[in-house]
Length: 205
Image (cartoon, rainbow, N blue to C red):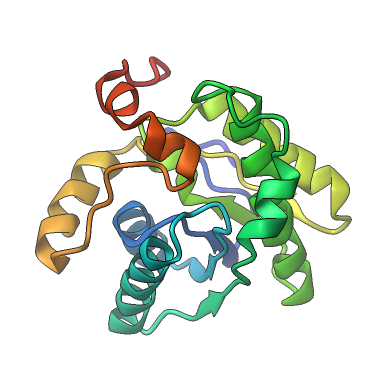
């Protein structure tokens, strides 16, 4: 990594990045920052965890709308909720930030790493790390696991809340009038909606 006083630490020599996007609101400030710093993002929308299908389609449509408004390449990942359910089988009653979440992140980031290698993009990262309700440690663990499983891929582990990006996200949310979901995406997080909303944010800076 390059030495950089900025809270966003940019890998040396990076020009393109495969950006796993969980939704448009979380992507917006990150994409803006990347473009302003001459890094070309390719948005990969891969979220088979989202339930129900109607919710998935709304979030996908908003992500695509955002990318098209900026002229950014956008890739539609497969929606196979059954495969996701099989992946997290036995973890249905895990708490938020439990093992189910780590497994979910790993599945999605492995697919992102595979897409990056397929498109000859050296680096991949994720907008999951822009949410204060997610565990940065879990995301980083999942990213490095995906990197290890997909030769030729490199995970850009970055806290995308830093550098004023979280505040900028909220401004862009209103500017674009994005649909702003109220739960992570899966039926298990939806069932625990109130605890998710009122739990303490991740204490990591």
